[in-house]
Image 1 (spheres, helix red, strand yellow):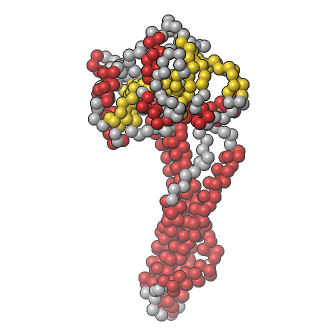
Image 2 (cartoon, rainbow, N blue to C red):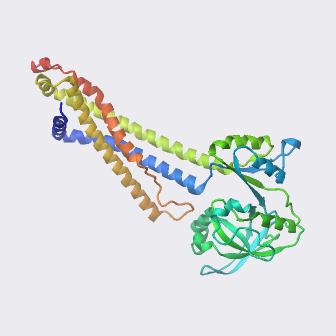
Image 3 (cartoon, helix red, strand yellow):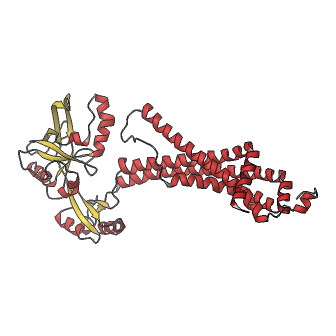
Amino acid sequence: MRAASLRKLVRLQLSRDRRGAFSSSFGISIGIASLVFFVALGLGVGRVVREKIFPVDASLIDVVPSQLSIGLFGGKLDQDAVDRLAAIPGVKHAWRKMNVRVPAVSFYDGDFFGRRLRMGIEVLAVGVDPEFVKADVQLGDFSDPGPGKPIPVVAASRLIEIYNKSFAPARSLPQLSPTMLVGFSFPVDWNRSFVAAVAPGPVTSSQVQVVGVSDRGLLAGVTVPLDVAIRLNRAANADAATFTGVALQAASPSDVPGIVAAVKDMGLRVDDQERRMAENAGAAVAITTSAMALLSALICLLAAFNIAHALSAAVRARERELGVMRAVGASRGDIFSLVLAEASVLGVAGGLLGTLAALGAAAAVDLIAARALPEFPFKPDTFFLVPVWLPLLGVGLGVLAAIAGAWLPARRASRVDPARVLAGQGA
């Protein structure tokens, strides 16, 4: 049968039974709409978790001292340990970290981006090798300027997000952008605290200046040059010889398992708490998305059964017509193709309708969320991610469900005996 003839016959049959065609394609559209909607939602929420809440670098390994150090089976992170870590095969860079091991406070009293602010807060600080955050430094360089000069610090990008969405609205403070924050200075007193005990050493007062914003910055404090942390610890008679951690940059993510094994053999520990939190959050999103996708697939399956029932009834009602077609030269393959073509059209229509409905629902949810939901940290502009393949998958699954439902009715139609039908005896 020629393609033009097939299209004409399909159009004729679907126009004769518009109610049945609408019912069949509507069932498919419901399933496809649910599937596309929930998959897009899962992909969108997963992206927020990966890129904003827990932006984990797959090739970055945080090494910390073991909690229990016994002889050769545990060790502290001194320079010798750092050198051995850097020599592990697959390690591209080894960046040292050292906490400022004395408490610190900042008492700010002055203009804060157009608002009067008078507030005292505890300050946490960690020193890192300058190369660790070099790409995010926007003002000057990231090195120890020496005593009496402003200390350059890098702020955490996630801390700004939390400030803008939670802290600032509650206190009527201005919203900040990374660009605005660069260059901002505030005083810090080292070895001083509002609530904790301080070391026997002297209090060191200094100004700190924000020179950049980074995903690698300390979330609950500020990141300073390593030499600054060493100098401040020495001034307070605190430990300035061992490091709090070492960030290892693997040459390739495939090198990570071998590096982790070598780190553990050295008696050190890998701090993967944030990575595990990201994995757990991602797993929760994936499980929820899979459950909703399974429900959507079941709806598509029910739609396939509905198509099977509708086409079986249509084949029985059209037995005489199909018998005449066989009598005038149509082959079994022609009849089989005709029924499947009718189902395919229903599948395409249902898939397109369902996909468009899902995209419209997603846009509506984003609009409602933007207007009705209060601002909160890491609130995305859209909760959905629609890659190019997702609408194609929706339409494809619609066609697949329709063809699956039409397969047995098509076989039944192709086996109609024209002689028996024309003699009035049925198939």
